[in-house]
Length: 197
Image (cartoon, rainbow, N blue to C red; front, side, top):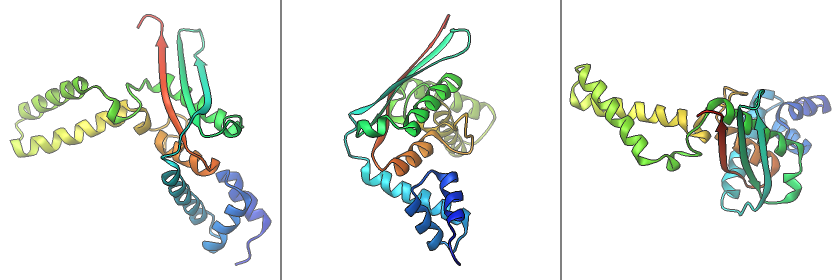
């Protein structure tokens, strides 16, 4: 199938990937836009994995203040170069993350950062609930593991479904951005402030 410039433009508009990357993705997938999108996402995952160990000492601190000034968020988003830190895509991602934090109120950045006492308290509650429902002990542990996993995905920023793009997690969006920008990007830290809480 002949790859037209319009096909390349359409794919580029949907993914934000470079022109040559879009052309290659379409060529490799017989002009199928959906398969080309998947191809580009997989390439982004590979780039992200390759760049994961690189230092991120540039970036931005983005803020979001909710209407009325009673809720505010600060988030630090890091990258390798100041060139990337100044791009519109990078800054928009930082704004989107700040807005997401305001809406979703994550407890920590990742699962490793969740305090052990919070996980232990939830585990005790889930074990008690399962035992009171009359489940056998061998089933209780499986139920608790599943509930803990779901609990962590709800309170950890990187595991949360994005408020703005509900079909993707924050980690998936971050990986896509790494693939698009071609350098390591990380969410370093965040703080959420709410009046009266």
